[in-house]
Length: 227
Image 1 (cartoon, rainbow, N blue to C red):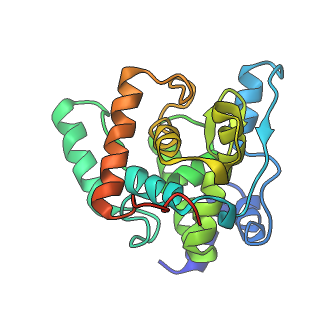
Image 2 (image 1 turned 135 degrees about the horizontal axis):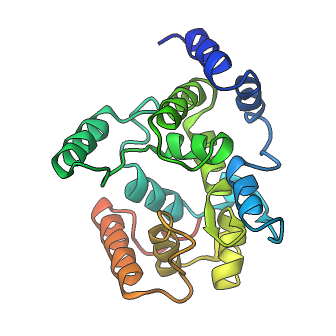
């Protein structure tokens, strides 16, 4: 689908501001996101937002790889939507008669966090898909990953990898070790439920799975956490 068509659909059915805001993200980080605003509303404003974006060069390569493997293994191959995962999720959900599996890519998750309400309606999923397609055509993969790592939620009022590292492990993102990386990545699907610094048995098991994925991938080697 041509980028001008996607842009026109976003302007018509979502907001005329979003294409301009996405284009601006090529050169700057957002000051606030829709998810941050939602959390502030839920807390009646009584919430301190911890948000301090860092460049991708300040994030360990092992963490970048862990996020891709755990959340969207086809990230560098798809154009914003993973059609294979969508088909598989549809079959699973039809078999269960309800939504039990999602198929959101990192780009879709970023679109939702930046611009949309956290509901699961069909309308919102279509909006998310349009925004993701536009983002993939206007931003590089590295920039999308950089934005994602800096705006996703990692605790109460905690957004982005550097605040998450400080909140959970009292260090910077670049100082995280492999086990801490795996625990943080394991918590991404439900960051207000699971606490990396005091992991539940489930979170520990999931982090061990992620370490196994990294080892199988060849990423978990001596010195791979560093630079």
